[in-house]
Length: 588
Image 1: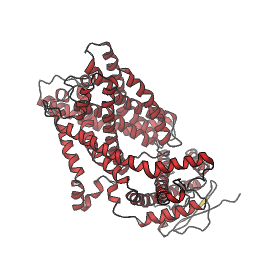
Image 2 (image 1 turned 180 degrees about the vertical axis):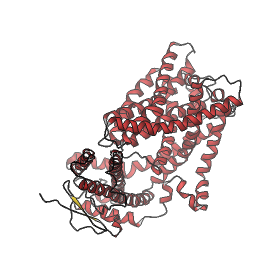
Image 3 (image 1 turned 45 degrees about the vertical axis):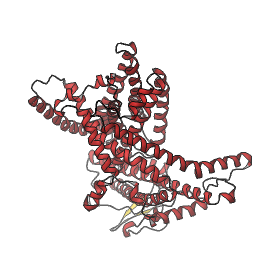
Image 4 (image 1 turned 90 degrees about the vertical axis):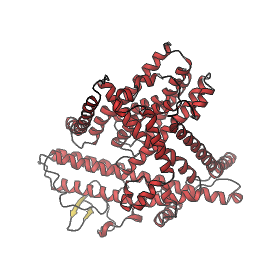
């Protein structure tokens, strides 16, 4: 029973550490990394524990000693994720988001923000409890069971819609992106959009710097707010020291931008605004570099494939010098085979496999009500190898992971439309904490849903601990666990048939509320994206770095005059004029 679990556990730990190292920004505090890492580890532990639970249910007696270990691990994983996602992580997230200057003040701000949320949540929960007691006077459930049922219902119902969207979109997206021309079109649109966002973020950060510098200039050394201003000045100095290439341009003062020096709270607001503007700028810059690099590599791949006979099936890259020697030729040939031939074929095969898995999951969800007829592919596979421990857990693990991927894919899509995103090496503390909270919130419901799909005809330890929602909260009605997946199946079929896109297109003003899918960017090339790529290609061939001159391509400056050749340094001071801010170097 423990072979698969003990193999998966260190791999899970390695996956969590490598993922954190890849996505975390450079200034993430250690306690945030530990919290996020532990939350992710507990969430994935739930996923790798489910196959072991399925195996013990099939092969061991209910009173077997190993069931006690499974029960303990379920309690540890579930309650860790529950407490982290609903209490610990939101508190740390509020602390990290606060702009206050002392630990105590940041804690107060965090508690105040979360208190409002939990008061509203508690009030809704109390109303639901009163309604439950009034409708079912003989209800004998516990408050803890009611709280668990409400939490799990939230995850099951919202997770079902997230899962349905991912089941439809992931196979389609991978299949379309396997085509080089289609991927080029998508990237041209992405680059054009992200260049505009990067330009706006640069403008916003420039404005924030102007406000901070102007506030510092007008504040005397004896001002009571001066110590707080010194912290902001040090923050600016560190930013320019770490990234000398950043040049604020076009910064302007708004009507109320000189009112930040009134009290400590206003200074905290200024600090938070500056930090958020900085995080947003570097997040968009990271996304821009990712898309442009992928597009340039794709251009290299297409050129290498077209010239394969002339180059002898060797890959020539624009991003590195040519390899030399016999080993260099072998590596060039292997890289050509991977990028130009194998990668595309693997993507297409993967899309087909994922499409089959999506269809199998939908069929299993749709036939849950047919208790006497088991049409679940996963249930049939597990039953056919129930005497083999590793195969049972493998056949349970793979579709469960795919369901998690589909759910989290949709979750990140929502985040990109709202306030959080996962960006390589530039994800802020607040974003990391919010994402880990969402991941922890959906891991147990996804596992619970999958266990229902395989129809074991006997309760697993996890099901016993979670209990039936019908029993804990009768107001949901009988057989709730079998009915809500059917709604998800109908929703998925509507998504796959583009029903909602047609509705949103008919009501033009509703377009802002729909998921942004890559299929919208496959109609043609975006001229702005193509122009940016051509410029980046030219600069790359001249020996410059990708993204070094992106802002002039998209910047319009809103007709603000910037002094030609002006450079901003840590010691620069703003000269405030009626229309604009012009930076000049302070004489030594």
